[in-house]
Image 1 (spheres, helix red, strand yellow):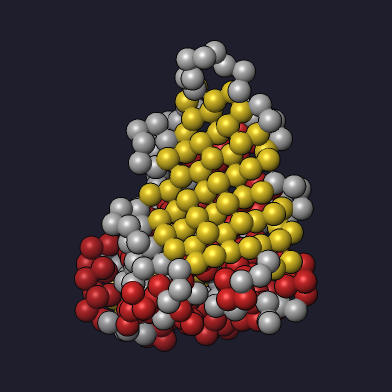
Image 2 (image 1 turned 30 degrees about the vertical axis):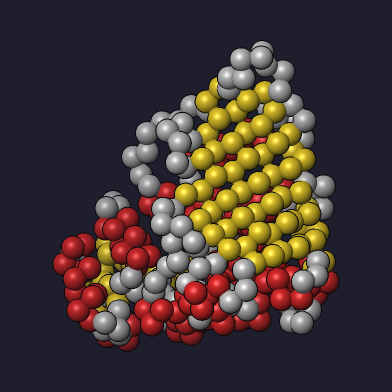
Length: 337
């Protein structure tokens, strides 16, 4: 039985808490939030005790793993605080606001001999897993061009921290970093980044960015993100020499594969998918906890999370400078201009 504490009673804390409360061999021992009433409300819903501070929780409960679901700027102090106690850590993405903090967090956890997992949950969405399998099987030949989109409404968090670009990094660092991680998982390391974005979008509570990635493998990817819509949707398209695999979350058939050597009817074959019994957040957390118990590497490592940050921060630099950024050079200086 693993005893898990969740820090943060917002959207992601609620999501993590809900999944953890349904798992066998897991005890959700508490919810921590500086807004104690909010923590109590979520605790009542999930059958967990509420605490106003992390210190209060660890004094009264046995803990093995801590899930950190807090704004990005305060990930580092909590990761280090939890690591000091020897508890394993699940931290929501992005790992940090800058590469220096991210590297220090990873090294700190290694020194304390605790596991650090980062919530890049897209690797656990079945549509994306199926697309990667189609690509790896060679069903569409070598991929030349990829396109992803992720968009929804401008988010609201405590103290409206998403609207503070210096804290959140906007949608490039907070949201489409998911797509950077997934694309790197599929196609390897990125060579160059070029990005465009609306100016001062955070001041108008909108944001939009278009990022072009050139991979060392030769693949070119166009990554589009928007915080200017009411409904959250995602889609992707991977075009290879012999076919295309595509997904649109707004469609009833989420993943389709179409070969190029088809009849003129234009029909495609849907990739079969079983109905989900567990949502991707459940699958992600279940996987992380199994890695704690079996002492093995997760599907997404802390180093993967660091690499996704490199791409996102290079894109932000490209937006600011209006120039292409060569990723190896950017990485060598730790993302510092």
